[in-house]
Image (cartoon, rainbow, N blue to C red):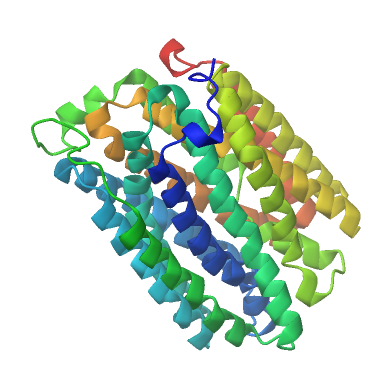
Length: 395
């Protein structure tokens, strides 16, 4: 039973280090991102539609680049170097937000930041699988996601504290965010020993046609699922903007992301551990039902209590599904193509996220905020239908 339902002490050290690196970078990133929509609207005069475009382009860039970084890590059989490059770019992008004087400069900083995320993402996710036995990968991905998300709620808490201390000085907060980003790079460099030749195979081009065929029907189904899921879940920037409509004071609006990420962090490991012993598609269905509830609550609520409830449900949905999807990719992909599979999964998810975020911004401006969330609920229902066609080996 212990091998099937591992305790935290059984999870390899490398997973803890990767989780710590993710946590520090998320403290850095989320202390900026939780304020960025407000900074763009109040300081730079950016429209909601352009904010949606920036968010969609930035996240899609990260997910697109993962294809190539994952394939390169498979070809070289090395993950850490690419991860270091990606985290380094993420850290170096932080001062650009503080210097931004236009929406275009913010877009450039976001693209640099997300380029770093794209470079590090697939090698990092593949590295977790390389160091973890198959029977505890759900728990390992859940733990990494939980630690990552701990940083995602500590970042907005830091942002709120600094905004109160510094009299709403966005730019100084952005400068301070550089510090945990640099610590993240240092921890990865000094703290992680990559396994020697984690995959033994003849080096070939991972994205040539023959290798893409080797991914198999189940893996391609999971990749398609990633795209459908991101269509149903647009950028969290819209949660921040919805909170602003409820009359929450400016300095406290980042607490919305704290609530979401606390629930995300608390639920990611337990649900990841649960996924090691139950049907993956059943758990994904439960997660979609929670997201539908979140969308309906956010659409109907105008008071801050209702907004917080909707955001909390959104966080639980993330905890139920995000680590699980990563574990499903690791399960269905051949070991020597795992980085490539994560990269392609991220690419199609990025296309879905770009479409979802731009569409959400357009719906918001044309019809109102509530219809943005109603649309998300409808797409969740379509995703539930997709899950009924699960290949047996992906379950």
